[in-house]
Image 1: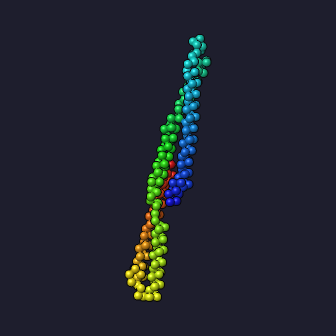
Image 2: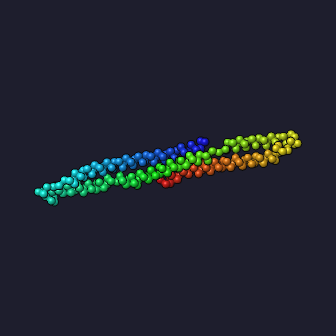
Image 3: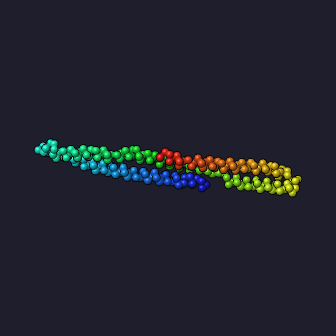
Length: 193
């Protein structure tokens, strides 16, 4: 039924899937940038760390101070560049978890597609037939009151219409409840994000 498609392909869920996918890609690129920077800084830092000033140079106030400043700078720069692990552990894994939860909800909705299979159309048709039978019975009762026995009795036909209308209302209510329950899913995702 079209209701299943509208829930699994509705704009909200599709938008969430795209947003999560794009955010994951964005933060993976940031992570890759930090990784690349960390590797380059580590190479540069190794060069600076392996640089020693000859003993004839001044121990302080000279070129050795510049090397020490570079070593300190590179230590802090490497620590900053190692944020890629934090991005992976904190941000990307959380987004992937949200995306997996959303995909799981979509699977659950698809598995519930049987809930959307309903017989509202069939019940509406049966109600129409019952009302037509009731109208025919009333018409025949006006023409020939002797025909008001058995299945043609207007009272029994009215009871059949009432019973059929209740069936139709129950089916419509069931479909409405299932639809309403499934519409909560995107809102829950918005609250969790």
